[in-house]
Structure formats: structure tokens, C-alpha cells
Image 1 (cartoon, rainbow, N blue to C red):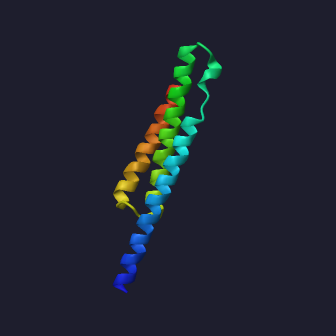
Image 2: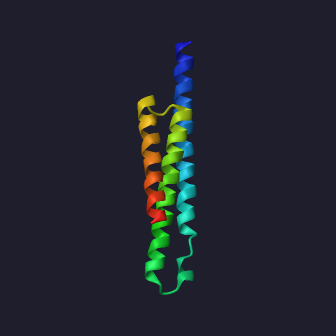
Image 3: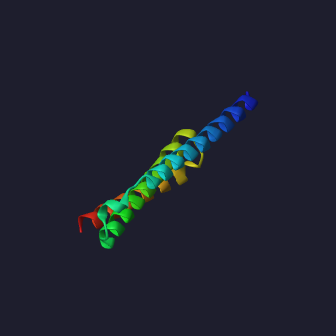
Length: 100
């Protein structure tokens, strides 16, 4: 019984890590496929769009980390809660900065 529990925990952790790698790959491909040349020579607009995109990808990865860590029990419950609160704070800060 004890060995089966250890194998199940190990399988969940490996599955969680593979899922995180796949999500990071998807986010990286999203950044590669952005076409900022459509803005022409307007560098402030390019910078704003690029920074919004990077912030969105970062928040997406953080929230996915929280979900994967909670589902696959990669971290302790307190760490998952801390990550969740920090993700919500990041979303709040981004929302306020976008509204300004």
C-alpha cells in the first residue's frame, strides 16, 4: 500500500512538470508569432503592445502554475494559496494599469 502511494505521488508530480513544460512552450510560441511590424515606426505603441503581451503571458503562466500545482499537488497547500493570491494581485495591478 505504501509503495503504491509513493508511485502515485511520483506519477502526479511528473505529469505536472510535463504539463508545465508544455504550457511554457505554448506561451513561448505565442511570443514568437507576434507581429509588431504592423505598427510601423511608432515605437511607443510597439512598446505598449509588447509590454501588455509579456504581462499577459506572465500572468497566464502564473495562473497555470497555480492550477497545475493544485491539481497535481506539486507544492504544499500554503504555497498554492500564496501563488493564487499573488496571481490575483498581479491581475489587479494589470487591470488598474490598463485602465489608466
